[in-house]
Image (cartoon, rainbow, N blue to C red; front, side, top):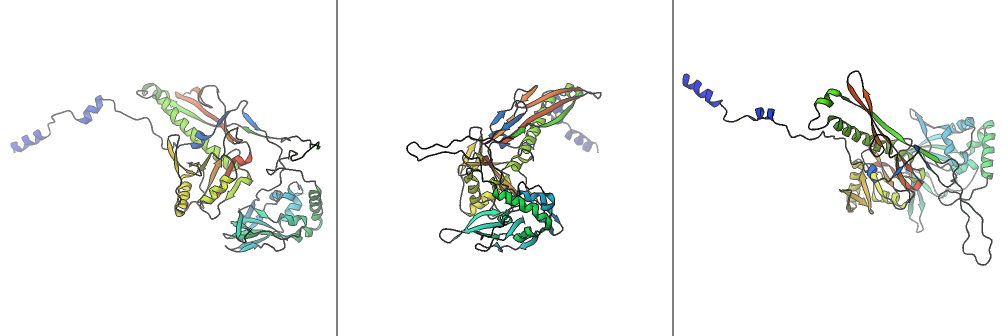
Length: 465
């Protein structure tokens, strides 16, 4: 019995110091606090930034004539869909019509119709006697090519319209065909319905008469007031007099702000600052979160975000659903000097699948220390701030940048008080009764589109498998 006890004691005797005990006398090698929410923030890196004095930036442009080519909005009650009466002012001839009662009466005369995939909504050569509002779905506007083949002129989607000429009493023929490529819900207004509004039709008829009699202002292809020029003449020809007219109420972009209050207990700041300064680490992580919010607002903010401020003429839809090389070519051909694309990483993966189907392998290029994919030499940069809808669709943004190229620019304000990064400052707010330090962390920013074609968006991009 005694022999067994002696052996048991000997096996527990250590010949050297244990690691658990040794750790009490050492300083552990440690990392700084890590943050999974940090992204590449390509938009902040790639935009040229303009220093804004006075808190706002005014974008002066040449005078453009609004033609009412916007999209309409609808409301639904169960399966019934109605157009919002005030939205009828998006039709060219009703742009300045102020009689809300007449618009309501006109909106109530639209008839709801459904079309299945492949159905022809209007046929080229038929009488143009109806106004069509596309409430939901996607359709192709098709015309015959020079050699008899069908060509897709454009893709129509939610809120688009065609046939508004019937409001003026025109009796022409459709010069294109519209075919549904998905199930479509369409609101239809027969031309004679305008004449059946009883007493309310008088104001509408008078407005349409004045709109048709109004002289057409000369414009260039961009819709700007034309500058009269002469060329190809000889001798002492009379030269036209002209001037470049400006917008009377140009848009002003005010700097937006993202802020937070950082709180640090004095005990932490006093006793736990070695080997890393706790306050500095708290500020570093807070600033990273603010920069992430800054990029999110620059893309999604309803007032100045890129997704909401693209001109309607620069918004296009995919031809078949997923993002194809044809769709990105359509984006590029609408502007000069495209600087980069922005897309959600899942959208980029969907584009790669479409390229692989066609045996296309876009080149990769080094950019800012990373390797990124390109299309036609334009980098496609990932940005997870671009939303993905419940229908598994997203958007692709393309921009031209810089003041010299009349592109998209970032706005910020330099040399502000207590600045620690460009247009970002940290201000000490004091110590409260609980011995907690408070710091106000603020970043000021905005983004401006100098001319409409500097920004384009490919909408309703399907990214499912």
